[in-house]
Amino acid sequence: MKYFFIVATALILAGCESTGPSKAEKDAELDQAISEHNETATAKEKIVCKYERETGSHFKTKVCRTVAQMEEDREDARKMLDRGGIAPGGGDN
Image 1 (cartoon, rainbow, N blue to C red):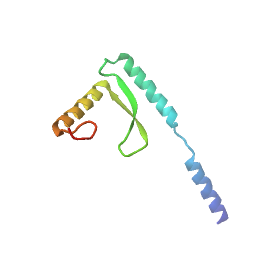
Image 2 (spheres, rainbow, N blue to C red):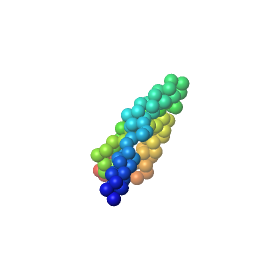
Image 3 (tube, rainbow, N blue to C red):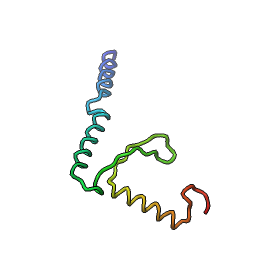
Image 4 (tube, rainbow, N blue to C red):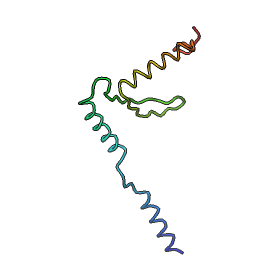
């Protein structure tokens, strides 16, 4: 029974060992791929990454979109505000 516990503990610890690339390595690969893409992309096809905070969270996540997608999102938000009559500051007009 003592040996079972030792073997089980060793297997658990070995399973916790990281075998894949780290987050920093993945981020570096992503940044490299985006840079390569942006070298040949048109102005609207270029990818821009920024950190955004989700509503209700203190954590920021990296979000990457093309310039065209960002413009479309901005226009959709503007249309929603126009339809609803909601002021950007959250107050009434």
